[in-house]
Length: 343
Image (tube, rainbow, N blue to C red; front, side):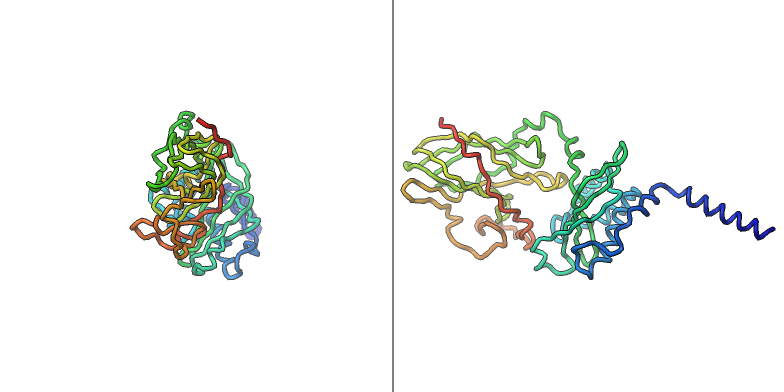
C-alpha cells in the first residue's frame, strides 16, 4: 500500500512540474535550432555557433538583458569594427527590449570576401532566416538578418535595426529640418564648379537616408559637359558613393538640380549620424579637355576600397579594417535624375 501511495505521489509531482513550468521555458524548448547546425558555416564552427546563437535567442525570450548585452560583444557587426560606447549599447538594448526575438530559423548564410584575409577567430557571417518576435500586442514573424562574428574565438551577435522603434523617435517636424551641418563640401579652390543652394533633409521612407539637392555654377569660360562627384565619410580616405553623369552648363551659368541625391547618414541609428564629405574629382569640357582635382591625379598604392585617395587621409591613422570591403560600402553610381533647370 505504501509503495502504491509513493507511486501516486511521484506521478502527481511530475504532472505538476510539467504544467507549472514558466511559459518562457516552453518557448525556449520549442525554439531549438536544428541538430545538424547552421548551413553554410565551416564544420569546425557549426557546433559553437549553433549553441551560442541558441543561447542568444533564449536570453531574449527570458528577458535576461544583462546576458543579452554580453552576447552583443564589444563590436557592432564584426571583430575590430565599430566599438560600442556604453550609450550605443544601451540604445541597442532599448530597441531589442521593444520586440525581443524569441525564435529564429536560419535559412541561409552569406559572408564578405574580406573574411578570407581575416584571422579565423575574427570572422563574421550574415545569418538570414525567419524570426518570431514578441511585441506589446502579441507576436509577429519576419525575415531578418543577424550578424554573427567571432572575437577571440567566441561568437557574438548583432541584431537587425528595429525600424518601427526608430520611426517612433521622430515627428513630422523632423522631416523639414535641414541637416546641412552634417555635410562638408571639400572642393579644390581651382575647381571649375561651385555649389550653392545646398539642402540636406531626411528621407520619409527610409529614415537613414538623406536627400541632398544643390545648384551648380560654372566658374570657367568653357562649356562643361560632364563632372564626377564623390561622397564619403569625413576623416577617412575611402568614398562609398560616386555620381558621374553628363550635363551641359554654359560658361558662367548656374543650374539648379532637378532631382535629389540620396545617401546613407548612418548604418545603425544608435551609432548616430556620421558627418559626410563631398568632393568633385573631375570636370570635362566641350572639346575634350578636362580638369582633375590634384588630390586624384597621382595614382597611389591601393587603399583596399573601391575608390579613394590617400590625400584625403587625415593625420589620425585609420586601422586597416576601417578601409576594408565592408567599410568602403557597395559600388553605388548615383543619379540626380538627369533633369536640371536653367536659371
